[in-house]
Length: 402
Length: 64
Image (cartoon, rainbow over all chains, first blue to last red; front, side, top):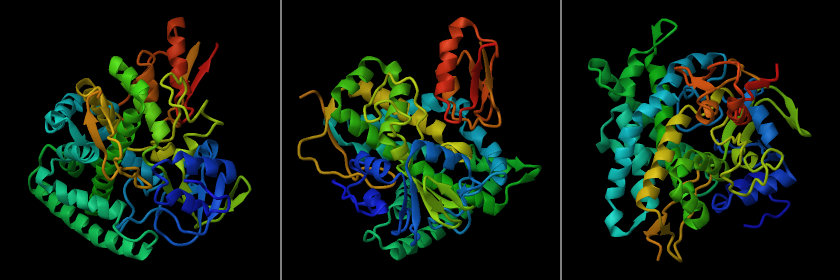
């Protein structure tokens, strides 16, 4: 993709092939318009002006100042009320994070590692003998969703409907730019999601199980239980965030490692590198390209005036290749000492599931490369990454060094 | 050398105790706690790696 200098910045980022090689649009934004006003709507699907912020320093400031750049009402994805905790700003937000952070803490996640490692191997067993697979379909999709359903103790047989909801919400099947049709699909899907979790919560109100929903039913904030609406608003966010992002991350990382045998060999020969590989590829690939905000108070950034009510697109992926922060930013360097990447955001809305994601991705890479050290994308394979959250539509791999 | 974490700034990224488990540890929320503010010379490099990788700039190292 070559970017013409006068192209609208939002269109640069959300053109159909932008997510295949996102560094090109990121570079364009960083060099030409690090704070850019676009007239072509935003990732929220809302029509109207949007401001794109791309430099590391500006993103860091925006993420840490919700009193100016707010997460409230920033993205409408079929939900009737703000998602908890993402769309509640401080100080209200802290009480929900105090409740939810321990559920997703590194200590809690470490206890899940053996169980997850077994699951990874079971998934690999399904296709190893074939000598090939569709990585996206056979591995990256079932792995995190199966694990999510275990954590929430929801029936595995519901997975197909969950995946359909996820697609309806995150990448509704409409003509590019048809925001009205997308909003219609999201609203209809939202109703189904609320109804599903109403029933799931009713069942667990009658009889508790070992899953996360039952623990939320018993949880207390400042001496009172969560209301039904609060519970639903948490569940809605968990299903959207829990089913999609790790799939995208696995697609991005295996795609990179399939095409970079030297880096792959380092990981195969030294599996203890895996945490570093995860952090560096989180930075370099930034599976979640952008996150949405709205301006709460007028503020000037660079020489652009942001006005209360403006949509804001925080281009996390651009910040992650900003040479002001990262030495040789477009090189993957597992020996990079300092790596304060923004792939999980920063500030009060730092990704709640980041430690679950890190565990899943690290263990998946370790087991995959232990069992399948050599693999490649067959010549002529056609696939694309979706903009926004960078998943492939298909990612064919053949195993072996041939 | 001494190390200090600003609890109000920490958002629980967990990079510090992943990189320097002898210097930092996690509370039940995943937020950082300093194990012993007084660093031994052997701990200094790991503490610096933890500080360098904190996305919130919550960790300070001082010479006194």
